[in-house]
Image (cartoon, rainbow, N blue to C red):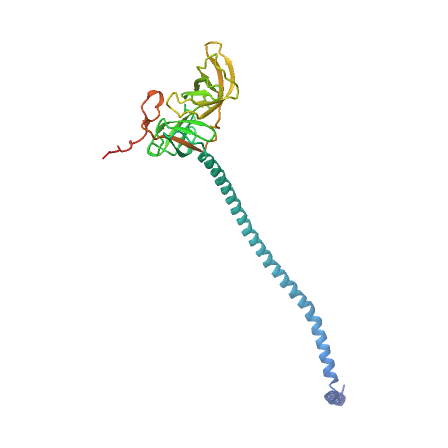
Length: 297
């Protein structure tokens, strides 16, 4: 292509451009077409981009929602555990309150005795322990002197055997060393209730053959031994038969109190001038320094 043709072609293009420019200046048709085309292209490009942005924002929001839900669930789970623990504690408190109310509502005793509440700290101490016993949180400074009877709303539990200043060990009525003077509640037959061990039945000794005793009859303390107030329920008669070896009846009984599930007991503290007799005439066994002597003015 020669220079002349190039110049001619360039001139024609310039004339056409100027003509179209002048025509566009009057009509603005090309500007409008270009704006519409650009707007359409821009819309086509921005629409999927906006959709992606929205989806990403939704995913991000859902992620935070899931995190918040997880945290809320963890908080609610902790609250549920705390409420369950409180319910269990409240249930235990209500059970204890029920037991304490039963202790308080016992019928009145002789004026020479007062009731003192005590908590059971432990059962028989040690695998080789000989006695059927419990440990309570009262000692000789707080009403738990040796010889003090222990009861529940159901009946007699035993007596304090040895005491320190603030705790004591009580022998249960099932212990072989326990001997209690009793009456049958209905026919007033007298005898001595003897323990034979925690897993064995009680025996009632020295009941005359001509006495009337029925199964299921309740045995109550007679007070003749000076150890217990009269009329405390102790045991229920299980079996009655004449003895093959003596002139007395062969009678077995069971305690009225579940001695393996004790949590609270009442001590019957003697407030009169005479205290209950000690075990087999033995002196009181106090553990630790004795209480200071009381001085009279």
